[in-house]
Amino acid sequence: MKTLLQSILVLGLVFNSLSLLAQNNYNVNVDKKNLAVQGYDLVAYFEDHKPLKGLEEFSFKYESATYHFASKAHLNTFKKNPEKYLPEYGGFCAYGVSRGYAVGIDPDAWSIVDGKLYLNYSLKVQKTWSEDKPGYIKKADQNWPTVGKN
Image 1 (tube, helix red, strand yellow):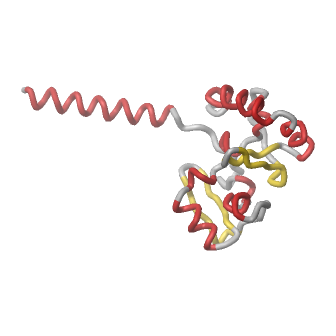
Image 2: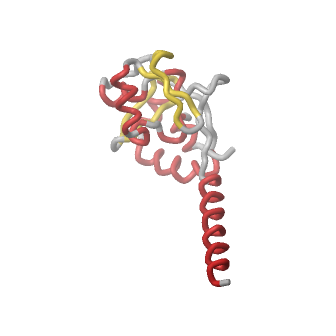
């Protein structure tokens, strides 16, 4: 009887953990083909310091999205530590999230702050974003739990 109760308790904890994991899944900015960041190479932002269009031959599906990379080396780098390269807020415009909504991005409007990639809707929006990155990041961090689930 004691073993049965322990098993039920363990199963309950497992199901609760799975439920929490499911609740923490946020939206990712993808197109109709489930391609993230309009096919741009996430590693290039960090290593080449510029946006580079990825190639379909260097594709990788991570969680709910497909990512393209400009080279096999970038693909392998991403595979080793995807979380390091994923854009904040599921790849939606960081400024938009700070304002309470999720909108698309222009891959040329980007910045890295404290080792994290932030994308913006346009170069014009990026200019506004750049005026107070810490303030907008704080607001976006507060909004993302709600915005990211819509």
